[in-house]
Amino acid sequence: MTANAKLLDRRQKIHLAIRDAAIEEFASKGLDGASTQAIARRAGLSKPQLHYYISTKEELYEKTLLFIINEWSDQFFLSSVSDDPKTVISEYIATKIRHALAQPQVCRLFANEVARGAPILRRHWSASREGVERAAELMRGWIEAGKIKAVDPYLFQMEMWAVTQHFADYEAQVRFMLDLDDDQPIDEERIITDVTALFLRACGLDNS
Amino acid sequence: MTANAKLLDRRQKIHLAIRDAAIEEFASKGLDGASTQAIARRAGLSKPQLHYYISTKEELYEKTLLFIINEWSDQFFLSSVSDDPKTVISEYIATKIRHALAQPQVCRLFANEVARGAPILRRHWSASREGVERAAELMRGWIEAGKIKAVDPYLFQMEMWAVTQHFADYEAQVRFMLDLDDDQPIDEERIITDVTALFLRACGLDNS
DNA sequence: AATCAGTTTGACCGATCGATCAAATCGCAC
DNA sequence: GTGCGATTTGATCGATCGGTCAAACTGATT
Image 1 (cartoon, rainbow over the protein chains, first blue to last red):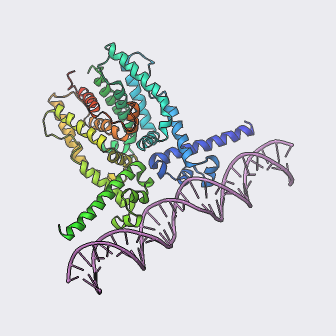
Image 2: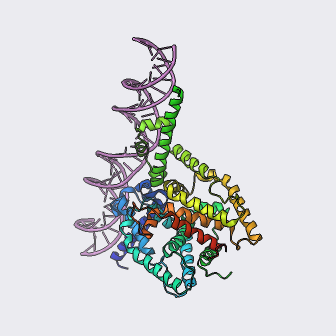
Image 3: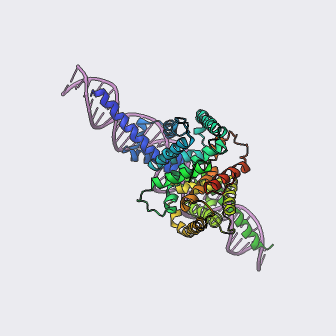
């Protein structure tokens, strides 16, 4: 490995640590509540050192947010890899719930931004319009073909999002409802099974 | 009206203004992000004046939070005023959605606290255990009597909470999904109808 | 008019905020 | 080991943070 590559590698590692620290801090405190001091500490840096790698807190926040939604962009829309509504819906829900349980902080950061009125996000989410409409079109096709019961395609997408996201955003409450301690894992399969059944039944796809 | 009563009335008004201001500020910025300066301004007070009526920011936060959950305590559990599951579920959802759309900031403040890991709330929500268990028992009764399909009583409660709460916590995203401007009202009836149908179908109560 | 509890105000406290700077330090090529 | 670009550091900036205080003000009672 050349010296130059080593440098790049080092920098990348630090930027990764900063991103992780930013996600943690912004997710639990929000943009205004987060402090650069705390982000630096989480990343194992001093405050001036952090500012050597980033310019401002606001920019770090925006970049972190954009990184997240770019990672999500195609993953979390109903995708027509299969033509079978049952398969498409089941896989969407399973993927989304696994992500929510594995990366709750990422979900919470997103939730926090939306709760603030999405001042940063709304400048970028026009790009998501297409995904929403494509999914709605897909569902309308299923309805016309008699494959699923009539549902509001937009509200149905939102409802799936709401329930799956809930297991990250409200993790503390989920643990309370399921009578779990902070160190006990949440039963992923139990939740995926139940939520999947909920939405399949809601559009007449469950035979139980 | 006596002079003494006038004084009490005045104080009460100010305390109400502070509570409203606190809800707004804490809901959009969180505990750490909120500033007493901003809360005072929202309430039409100076900062020292605010501290004449409250002691610390943390205490104001806790009191505001407790006021909210006390207001909710019995309202937002499945209550057995009727024996008919369809009625009980429909009314719960309608009430919850109307509240979410009318008082989104209140919902968001609660959401923010839970997202932080509920450090304050968890000291008080053992009182909610009973409500959760009572609702679960109610649903188990329905299932045994063959009135509804088998569902997980705890997850079913959470899912209803998740979807209804979503319309407050994610209001900005809801507006995006439904292609609404900030000044356009959200169609309450459309949402209540759809969400109700979702959950009634999920437990086999919808005949459409 | 004098009194006095209740309230409001401006000045101010130490601490921390986000951010900057010059100086010190580092790693590596030569 | 000298030089040089990349990085790290301690000191420090002005602003704001949560909170306090004595002094001024208010309005009703006497």
